[in-house]
Image (cartoon, rainbow, N blue to C red; front, side, top):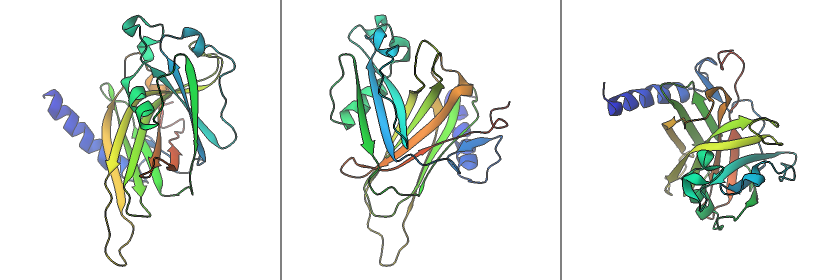
Length: 236
């Protein structure tokens, strides 16, 4: 079976499982029943700055916040101390925030504006180097909207040299949903995307989960969600 056919088959199976909120816990993990963050704290570290990773004064998430971490490619390329965890997705995210590449580290915090309850994220089990993930949004308006779905690896404090807990972004899916005008009395539309996401070398699959958020046309976050898994869903 070719790689393209394999990915298409995997994507179709993942979409079927992840689209069902009642999917069995052993086949998927989702944001169902999870606390809803009210703000997103994004911490960016330049891959050149090894000391930034072990900095104990790293900005902490306030109550109700969700903190995620990005490693931005540095000027030293593959020779940078943190190059193995760097991703060009971090550059795309900085561009979306209209923020420069940090020389060392910086944080950006966005509070959800009039948080909406209609966001759901989910992911399946690792398979052949990929993990199926989805983002599902019951839009309460015509948009346009942008969905962001991040595959993150949870690193507890004391793991891999970090003194603070981190959710390190390992892969990213950005989904633009153009604005549309529903007819008179038409219900709000459902926006859905499901993809197989590559698990980068070095990431531990048992630590992976997904974080998703929705932005409006002005770049304001309108909903945030994070997946959660029980022990059975992790195979343990």
